[in-house]
Length: 268
Ligand code: SF4
Ligand code: SF4
Ligand code: SF4
Image 1 (cartoon, rainbow, N blue to C red):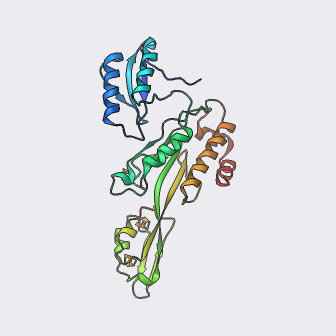
Image 2: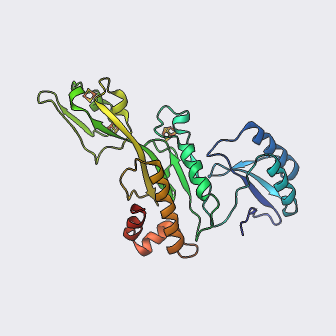
Image 3: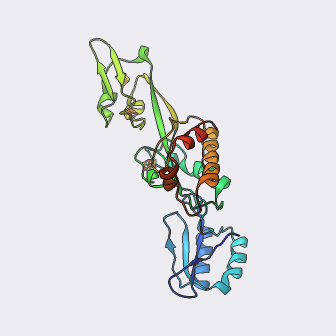
């Protein structure tokens, strides 16, 4: 059975957490949370690392009244325990100039599939819109990063060198004399800056996702959004079936290795 009261160190008091939509709440929701914190808490809220708003110092006997109020005011109480924790996201293409993907959309889809799901231990998941990695996705159990894979169109290139200059990791080299353009795919961090800077449309960017499990990228860039969700579905199925109770994903890899997991998620 799902639990919604997070125990505090102060006897008899609990915190109640409210989900955001991958980091966003409407002003109406904020007013409703304000009312709850005034009535049932101590008149303040805290922010959790999972982009939730928490009201501390709630008493157990007030929970039913709070739950009723939440149902009437479009607030979702976040469950606690060994579950799929609320998927977090940066704003990605919604507002950030560097954004490659719509991070909140991806996080909310994952949340709608798995949010609150009971598992052998908690799973954290975050979506970051570009290789700047503001959401530190490699510090989550599951991390998704927006990525661009540049494709070269030889006949348009004038070998101006703008792409070489903008690449922070020195992945591109050109030879003007011989008219040769090369990219080192191992060095490339898939930021897409070279694609943006090329004024001759000699670089086309293929947008996709890089996925990390316990900080490791086992799979090549994923181009299809549905495929991304299928891989996450498979990863959670594998974790549910293979992890010991209270074992984190990284510990499961230490015990079993990652090869079987990689094959399982890669073939789904
Ligand atoms: S990760 Fe990229 S898209 Fe997301 S906030 Fe940071 S810079 Fe912007
Ligand atoms: S910026 Fe475009 S045109 Fe210039 S060298 Fe790079 S690919 Fe070629
Ligand atoms: S995508 Fe970014 S890292 Fe890759 S070659 Fe272009 S500028 Fe360099």
